[in-house]
Image (cartoon, rainbow, N blue to C red; front, side, top):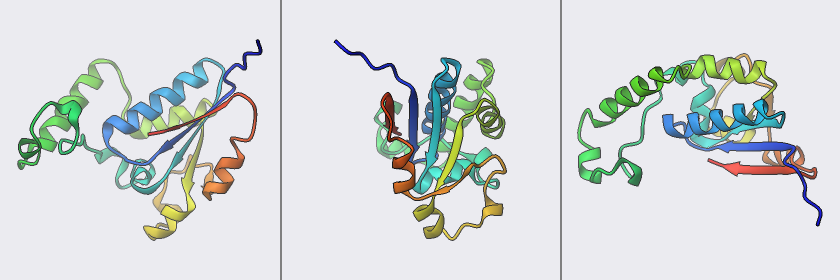
Length: 158
């Protein structure tokens, strides 16, 4: 029986809610801590996690999120998203979780490759100066998939 060890993890981040961003960042960081190559591909609304003006103002999704255990109507009330976001950030601070901008710097310094999706980048009319300095580049999805072309590589969509 031939077992292939995980050698590379590629994360596709499609939504920049706090819970999705931190899930991707924690898994990417954990991979690096285990000696596994790691990359994050930011697409569609996930691009907000690497936009300088938006990355520190991400929110918890309170509507359409069954894990919140609150009715959709309540989650949509004014102030609910802000309250849930404040509560989540407070709990993360207790665990010494870095804010998004610092976490991106940590990821980059540890060798995690950070990529923006070309299609979404063009669709949202972004410019390179809108994005973080630690970005490794802007790739098409084909370019990103080519980076997965090796044994022991896993892709996770978040």
